[in-house]
Length: 166
Image (cartoon, rainbow, N blue to C red; front, side, top):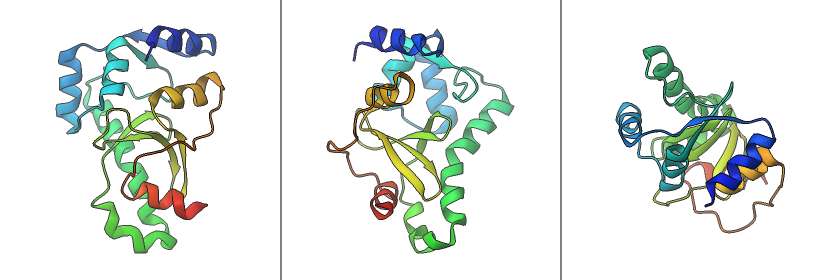
């Protein structure tokens, strides 16, 4: 992925960036949140870190911010478990992958894939927002929409929710 072209287009649309994260910062993030960043996200964050109101502040290691990000990681499961119509799917929550907040209520699941899809979720209102990180950024910030119809790897729980929404 050519990060500079992507970042330049995002900047043209008002997104601000800080310098990328160091390897030690990424290691610290993965340790604190007990996650393993997919290679696409890891490489992007090493190149540049998007900043702003709805982006996670990955380089802020204050207790308050760590708790905030952990809550954002848990929030989609809280929404779905409180939805009475999805109670039958609750057993699947324990098998669902951890989620990495990307922006607002957009998440990337941690699955065995170097460049997982990104989806938008507020409870049952869940849709694919990009088949990978690059497509997501184009769809969200550059407004060059791609129809998310190409193969998207199966994501436990979330693929089922999206399939049942159709």
